[in-house]
Image 1 (tube, helix red, strand yellow):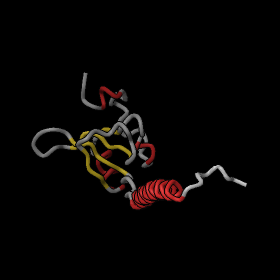
Image 2 (cartoon, helix red, strand yellow):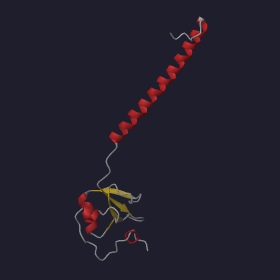
Image 3 (cartoon, one colour):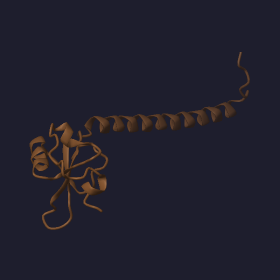
Length: 128
């Protein structure tokens, strides 16, 4: 039926070696991709959840709290630390600004604590 193969034994063995080489390469690539996929799946499962609340810290002695954010807020700066719900509420009640993007004050049920403070992002971050 498929008689397009070479008629001599030497060339048939050469073809067999060549195909075995390619099958080995393909099998190694499949194993690599399966291992990589398993590592990615494990990384997704093992990834810790973001904290529920974070406080952005200022610069200087004692690094005072500057702003409270929800844990996954993209506006939180690099200087931050996770806080518990009660500490986030206490910080907001003590005058620490709430992020104007994620609105942790609304999520925490704190309404109109800072009527006198401006609600712009620049004012919240302490810039003019």
